[in-house]
Image (tube, rainbow, N blue to C red):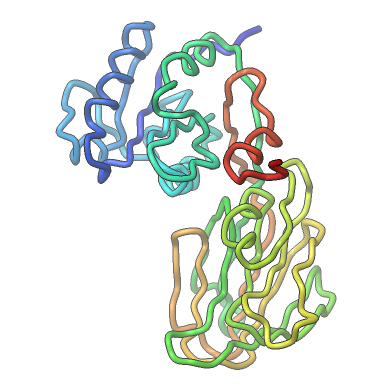
Length: 288
């Protein structure tokens, strides 16, 4: 039986010039389909759209049964993380540059959205990372990420040294500008620039990729979905980022523990969508 939506959340990259007319068109279209529409509060405030309810991300996650994100991948990453605990399915309309996870072109939103609302769509679950920073055995920071967790050296020159273990097994001491622990979703983001492989989203694994490692044999490695621990051994003012959430000034002995979250993101795509077609279209993968 086709999924019937009733209450739709709209989130926009409200800093983008000229986005209000597009958001208004989408909101009016959804209303014309008999759907209740609510805007994310910051989107409503920044655009001055007052004809619809304005709710916080937590309220949208609890009250809505579909989210429409208009923006780039950064907009989707931020909102997906905020509503992950509610299991809200998300549709991405690209108003940014690459648009890898906001895959519907802005000029085709109407023809793509109509069948999705009717239940004719592909459902794609994506695993998420969760983790914490431990200092003297106590948690001082916790975060959730769809793309990656990145430990980086400070602003001063010099590498960071990290002791890496997976499920309690020692892997290596790595000296580099940083280390990326990436989900399959994040394998086409920062980790790809660091020389990592592309991982299909259905793979139950993580990618560990050093950033500019001191030893050339420290290559990226695909790991099973266990707990990855990274202990700061050396380096000044290192920081950790969970997608866009960050903690600076890590200390020697601090441990960053990363594992699979019990939450996941559900993307809805137009019927016939495939990950391989996205790679070809967005990354020019195997072109020629």
